[in-house]
Image (cartoon, rainbow, N blue to C red):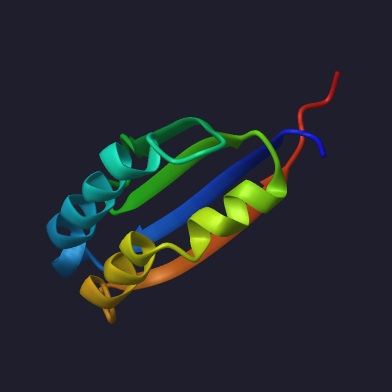
Length: 96
């Protein structure tokens, strides 16, 4: 098992940007306490404030997958249903 970096790209609909941001921020304090979470950092684009990126590092893919099945992720999805224009998830590894 090796470390996993996740880049999650969330593009909110302009009319729902504040809702999406609020719901994304709710995920942080819960997630950083999860087993295997090394960091979970949210960024908002300076030129397009509707664009958010999570940069995440996890001890391994299995613990990240466990995170993705947690109730707070489900609650986020439910709260932002119809508010997100697009979502992209990249599973990456550090190149040494």
